[in-house]
Length: 207
Image (tube, rainbow, N blue to C red; front, side, top):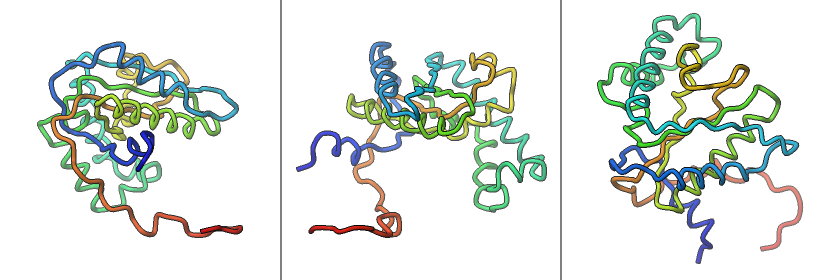
């Protein structure tokens, strides 16, 4: 039988449909507290958090991201060095679908979005990734779904909205996560790739 931590890790899913219920502020604070207890390089604890629960503003941010995706697609040559995925047809097809959608397929109408910020320093992104994973697992343990929103990184192309969001000068978006109570939870995890396991074991192993 799995212990509670392993059970949480293996049952957590990325959730993209949320109920309309708000998440109580004290629960959000507990989720962030889990992030604060993540390991970090040299114990810098380099993360800063911005919580957005204003649904209108979340919708506005979604529109800004779509606008920035459109900007990138219309200037592919300029951005190919930064985003090498722009060379891939599948990526271009997906980005086109996102920018043209009339629905919020960025934040999925989530009642809460949390940005994890950091300064560009060695190993800060890795530390913030650990914090983000802690937060998603803590949320799942309390019945709250989450989804890592990679597209939120495109907000950095819009200085005005970075200021509206309250990102301090010299900070970048390390992670962005939507949170909410799931409408439905997928029953099974997708199969784990066999080539994503151990590729080499150096040292004795006792079976």
